[in-house]
Length: 114
Length: 114
Image 1 (cartoon, each protein chain N blue to C red):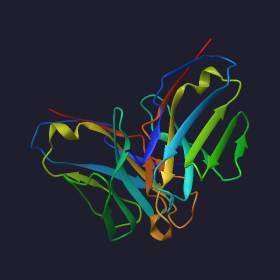
Image 2 (image 1 turned 180 degrees about the vertical axis):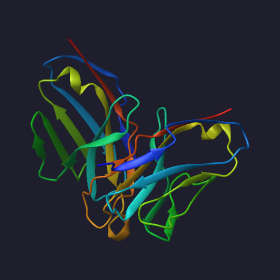
Image 3 (image 1 turned 90 degrees about the horizontal axis):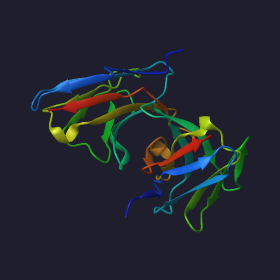
Image 4 (image 1 turned 90 degrees about the vertical axis):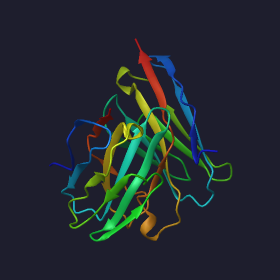
């Protein structure tokens, strides 16, 4: 019963490097999203997707790209890492069609950009 | 002004105490309301949804006041295991494909001590 799986759990990048954070869910959820969590800021929405082939920007999209080729997978790409992207990243999924729907989160990726 | 505001605490209470957390939201069109719990270095998990009529789950009671745009969480008979960060979460959009697009408060830290 995997739920939402994120990889890697930890990553250190040098400024300017690129990488992809992986997210997969096995609950057949239409809605998937990426958040970043910084101290004192709460979770902030980066990008989201309401189904395969459909993505949109959230509150803090700059420096990140996403794609959704399948229902299960929603990778987040950092194009050119900057120290300001040091954060904890959470992927989440839910049934989007219902109010009061529960969001299920992955275990998070702790990213440090030096 | 942040869309969802919480008192960050920290709240330090003895076992058995009753503690209350408050949260305000700025968008009157918000439709769904939740409390999530986040343990240290873990992912957020749904604690309970919040309904207009108020709802209770064991030692936890949630209240919603739409007129004042105010949400509360009451924990009775606190346990050591209640120590966590409590996140106030709002679905601020009116519906359709917006379900699942959540806005988080910065969280309230609770520590229950023996």
